[in-house]
Length: 248
Image 1 (tube, rainbow, N blue to C red):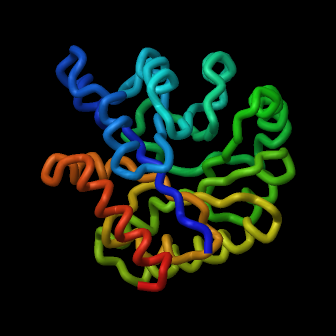
Image 2: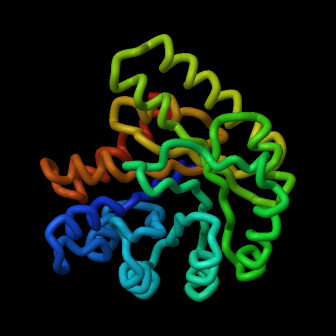
């Protein structure tokens, strides 16, 4: 079984920096610590309102990282131009609402398939692996494959929220959806990732799914880093993932 990759999202290091202004804590420094601690990649979401990651962070990440950068962005002309200038390893398209605290749902590829197909063509031409951040829904996976996106990331937020709230019936229903759609996505040739809201407790059942290639985890790891340190927080997530993937 292939090793499950861990992408560490460093957005909320920037959130802490921006709460006070100035240059600390530095998201690029956090990314380098994550890289040394065993992260297989770094995820950063450059939002249109620049509420956490800012343009100079992307400049610094592209210059400093040895592991791949997964550049999360909305499907806008501005973001496309930034991605084409930097040519990151991966580009993940996500929906954005200005008023949301975090990404609340998946991208509606079904309703926007023609526009998204045209939008991702130059990104793919520049060598980026394009991913669609979508709900665990068959129609969304079919549409993602149809427009030529090689990767999907399934939104695990409802599953993670149900786990945190002790709603075991909803948790099990959401896990069943993710399990089915991970297998379906792989069967139609997509590389399947999962992300949003996963913790040490909830990551195991997702990590155990053999078709999942990568997990992207940020907020929980950054929160744990306050108590453990960033390197140990990542190492513990890596341990939980590996234990589950290896049948523990």
